[in-house]
Image (cartoon, rainbow, N blue to C red; front, side, top):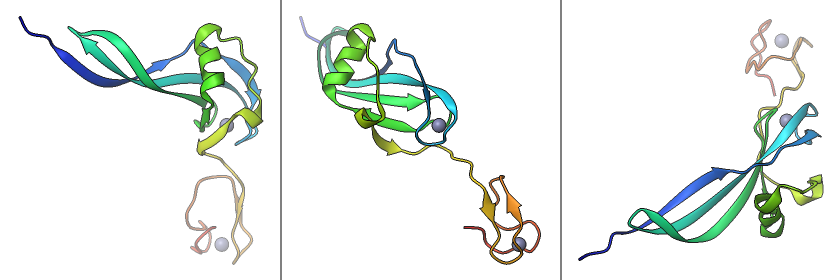
Length: 124
Ligand SMILES: [Zn+2]
Ligand SMILES: [Zn+2]
């Protein structure tokens, strides 16, 4: 008789949905919650979970935030959490569209150009 042990990590989407105005891009979107953890399995059945981390992702621009384990645990228990901006720590800012203006010819664009389409100057 032998045992099959395995240690893996996994990411689960939690049953959480909160409408919000995105702090990163200013559009209306939703927060979605994820839990990432490592687990030990015996015969492919998870018997121990640890190193849980909780993440929030905004649906509008895909910004990713981390939240404290307290809040994360509440989310995974019943999803009954009202997230405020101060609960979130930004990990990765999503795609934000902002107006760029060419310093050479004053051309304005909302598109994601690296160079001015009119005169070819690098846009900042
Ligand atoms: Zn956003
Ligand atoms: Zn230009």
